[in-house]
Length: 312
Image 1 (cartoon, rainbow, N blue to C red):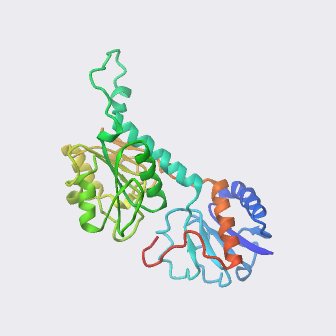
Image 2 (tube, rainbow, N blue to C red):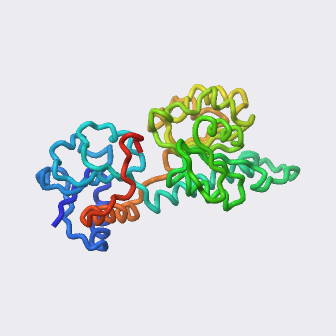
């Protein structure tokens, strides 16, 4: 029987314990689920992990075959020098669907100009502006990993002119795919609505700064459900004040929770959502964990294994 250690947030254990147990049974895996202290480290076969959990030193878990993250982002653990086991990030149906729905909803909100009507409930009948149709707007998605590809495809299905950008070449049907530094500049120039779903790496930190924001069409909308480190906050606030960026809807931030005195809260052209775009759902996440354990026991490649050199 395998020993699977849960090292996630303790308050979520009552939810994850039955979900993981059910997923393991369905996958035909005999395993006992334990918390830190309930088994010797050398007896642990797999670690179900979140950076907010109790395990930070992986050295005692020398027999563990993989560390299976419950989070999509691995920037807080990938550089841990004690982590020598394979590391797999979380990509699951619930997380993917949540991201697609948040992105599609926010893109449609800005595309249709819904804020204008929501904030003007004053009895005046304003029907002088017909909403545009999707092909009239160019949307750029930065990042064409699993989540970015899903969002770009959904937006293209709605009829938007979608450009996707990634560091390396990608081919996504229905998407104009660009890559590299020159490709980034062109992707930004096309972005009447810009969606960032990039990981947090040294290369992406501060990618949206004064220079790159200036490449956007005047009045462009910025949506960031990816990583807060992507944005130079001072540069974005300056671009908003100048009208270069018309509105920013932000779900992730350099400091979370976003401090109450942060300028984003009071800015009239910023919408803050509290990191809800791509939450991990225990049911669907547990199925991914169980499948990776099955793969590990069968000698098959793990799903979503992290490339340590790239950081994701």
